[in-house]
Image (cartoon, rainbow, N blue to C red; front, side, top):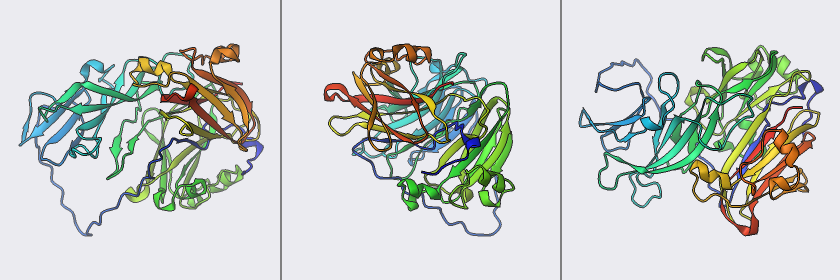
Length: 441
């Protein structure tokens, strides 16, 4: 394990959190970069339609039709040069607001949309801002109310009419608590010939009343140290930091060439590869957005890390969560996280199953069992029903699960890697959510 100096004791986000659930899908492959001829390029703009309201994106399924998602809640079709009067799908009644940065914000087709033999035949996905309704798959402890929840949902087109979607086919994929109205992320995309849906989420929050020094890192090539194929990594990551208004505060491409390279190295946070990114910033309390992207439109697997460097700074709560299918036998859900720094920290880990049903999740795990293991694989904590062991501590943290059959563990852990195992009682199967929270001191 790499050791860090004491002034790097407060880590806002654990370095890694991953899901292993069998059967394992193949790792994503790099998206080929097309060759572009050099020389002068002439660009002309030509209107193709009018009458749209706050259009966000335009895409096609390869049959000549163009689909436009409007922030106000409708997906419209441009067919044979004409805008069809009837929307492909109308989600306006589900939205919490469309006059700011909320609304229907993302839309994409399954790569097998046109293939009758594909499980994704006729399926597409939306990203919407909706009123708070049920537990979220991803949240953070917050003293006040959340603004809304961002929801990713799967839909099916009509069998009888390809220009219409089946409104009753909705299946919820992901629900995220959003602290404020802005910076919702919302980009949805599949890479060619792969089953992975990529979902972008925005923002992190500096809480409290004092400024805090943070280091942000954008990693790619060094992920080979954690089992990611070198061919799949983001080869040259670039990181940007934006404030609550969207203004760019700082950016970095290659960390070793930046003016902060010495300070970052002194903190023990220098990335392992010179092409990776890192920046140091002193941030007052507020909302911030970090963007990680590939230089020259490169693609691949990358990792964003956020560290608070001051030992005197207050610890801010952090939540990392993953939802997936828990199967029988050895096909359990396994979540891993790494605690950095030099001092122990108090965390809560939860396994959520039955209450997911109220959020529209089909086939929730009826009775989850939660295990916490150390880096040697030894079992250090176990819980079946959260009220059986640490009920007082869990309620005091404001993290009592909704259902009595759900599980939770509170533990003070030293810096090290840890593994969380979520399985179904009596070999039951179903969809479950595993969460890790960093609690206040």
